[in-house]
Image 1 (spheres, rainbow, N blue to C red):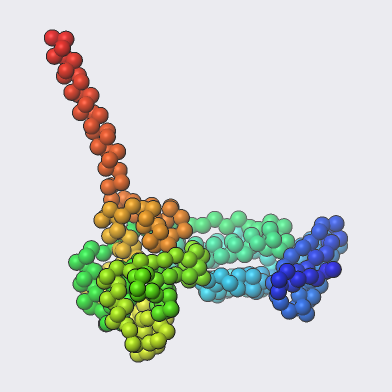
Image 2 (image 1 turned 180 degrees about the vertical axis):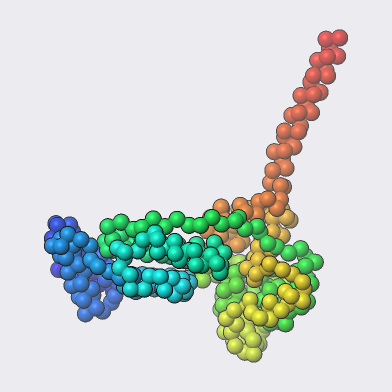
Length: 343
């Protein structure tokens, strides 16, 4: 059969004119849509064989396919934003005609407005689409090489306890509670604004971040401190579903105008909402929390993600440093004893 099901999803299977066996997901549960995808794909392979070139596909067609295949991606909205940014340069351009010159033109224009790091986020998405067009979709013989721009290493921005107290004192209550809760738990902004009562167990003093809510894609528990429990108690009765609300409605974004106004009143510069998480992690490390424990507490996917906080504490190296010092002292003592004995 040229079409068959795996679970609820239709798959296409056929032999290309060059003898290659093609088997791919149609990414749909609708048979008619799957048949249309199958026929189009088979025609493309026939054209490649007959004409001797890959199909003529425009950039926007690749974008549509990318969005369809990445429908479950949590940050797809970011991809859409990057596509809009580069649209002026690539709209209507055939994939084969996307050259380094076009990309360089985009980079030059954007550098007059934003930093290299911001440009790189767009370049990463463009590169991913073009690579898939070559490696999986077979729409390109060879994707153009896209090199990312140099980025300065960003330092970890965190607050002292006094600075945090000052900031909290400038914020309206609904923002203050979320900020304070973040400093207690280290949760990301989306996990705080999207927190539901169903995810909290007050008796066990913990909450649960589900896999589809975690940046790393893995569920993890979060222990609640006495301070964070008090913050939660203040929210009881405001809304039956959502924990943090404003005028009985869920809060979609914490880093709002009120947040920025609070930063200005506290005279704190170069500080984002996400830096509250950095502050939480920095305090932990400074108080002696091992990095592997911090990784579990913060739900980081890899150990490398927490190593950036290692410089804030040398406690984990102290024993080894003392070993070296002890050996040195012992060596000096041995030399003194040897001199006395020889004399």
